[in-house]
Length: 337
Image (cartoon, rainbow, N blue to C red; front, side, top):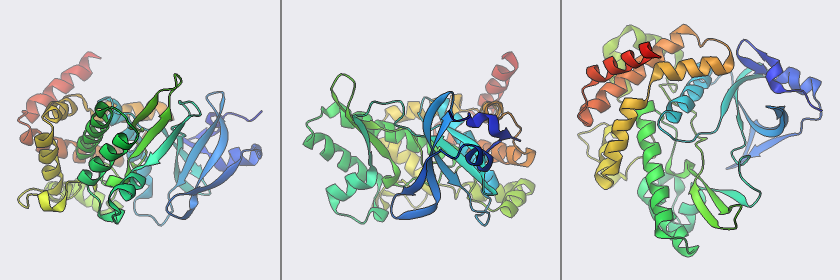
């Protein structure tokens, strides 16, 4: 029986090299999507006293700000939990000297008749478009077509679209910039009772968030210069935005997407207000540190606070919330816990 990978945690990271060396029967194979990626792979390991497949995603040492990136991905997961959005479960590891995230197979909690469909498959089938040029509207149209062809009720496509709108708003709050319209996954197939299902899968495309697409030098510069930080935060917007012909050039891209979604679906204004109230960067960081049994480097935490709260303040102006009153309320809640 394989050992538990949690026993190989050192300084917050699971040492996969030692684990694989001591548990050679762990089956690994490359991860194929849009071609072959020689760094990423799946591995069968023992975790939480169960045999599981995990997805291993090393960060190349030459990748810009790779070390901060892995912490940002974990904090993103905790932030979206606070507003009821499901995400893949991430953890920190070390592999061949590289900072690495590992995540559970999101199909583990479903039966064998459930499978994944990627957004690019839906869009290509619907529009025959270059998926790199696809927008949210293309994805929404493709979802409606799929549900119609599969004879699924209209409420199924409506719920999928609303869930994607929620993820987009969460991405705006968390400055998540690496989710295109084709990066959404969907669970399809039959549930345990034999009923056809189609719904948005837990998030797993969260590579860049909380400003982690900045270089480490830029990060330090922003911490020392509030004006620079404010200017740069406005440039962090999600790639799965509104169609270009429907954008307002007077707004930053993220703000334009926020307004577009709220205008299309008035329920999303209430959701955005829920995000502002419930998303707490301090609690998210604390949860990650409890999970990895180690502290996030202090300069990383400071940067997370600054970029998140700067974006939060800007969003509060958009949705008519008093930012300073909101911050005071959150501080009181922390003191009461």
